[in-house]
Image 1 (cartoon, rainbow, N blue to C red):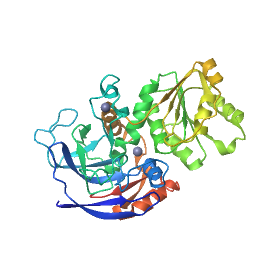
Image 2: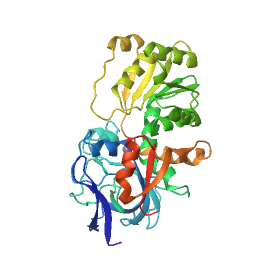
Image 3: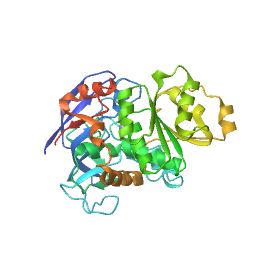
Length: 365
Ligand SMILES: [Zn+2]
Ligand SMILES: [Zn+2]
């Protein structure tokens, strides 16, 4: 490989143009990875349409899988396995600084104020230029959690580990689910489907999924939901509350996860939460304002926790989870369609218009 083709976005609502990059000279602080597949994420769509800020020009894409092309001498993955040319790998989309108060004392590298987020916070005009995954190659910094993949599952099943799945594993970990918990999953996109499957594996008593699309709610059942609520069939919140109570009992949801990306979903979750309930807000990644009455919150002694990204251990758990449950849940339906790199705009449009849940952009596979 001497040059690398990548899809470059120059501005908000712009076209994705395939451009050729010279291979950067690496400084011993990066692993060059040949990208095989990058799966689409809602964040790509938000950046494309200006709902999230990004430095232009940029190579988007942060949920990916590939093979090591060049690794510094003695480089190991985060479990201590040597990394060599040809090894199949996934990597965290965040490279934390590893030195700041948040990284070290708080132990929360995903919230590092100095973090680099591939395909999101760093453009392609900044060394080492190959900073996003809609590209034939990416330069992954050596402080980024990298994990060697030793199974032969299809790329489309593994690529979402590096954003959607590990994000959900962390959020659910924070909620510390127990067998008595009755969980409410608000929003049935990729994050919602992974939530149903992972909550199911964690053994909670009930999982209720909420959305506005019947087809997605049916899919939620295949991913482990015990009951579903289509908001279009309910005229007001009291009617939704009644449906939830029919499914889980009078108190409501002891645990809730917002993965709808809509402030109204957060308001609804707070309303439907049981006393002492815990809720993770995960999907609200763009600007918005909530209306909820803090009194409900105080009276219920509820916990509301934001969660963004994930730590290295959640990624390792994501790999284990996919390997052990690949025959149990229809993960193949989650990444419904494959595209080539020049079809990126179509892939993101299909995702935005909900024709697919996720798309797999096959770059070298
Ligand atoms: Zn993402
Ligand atoms: Zn830091």
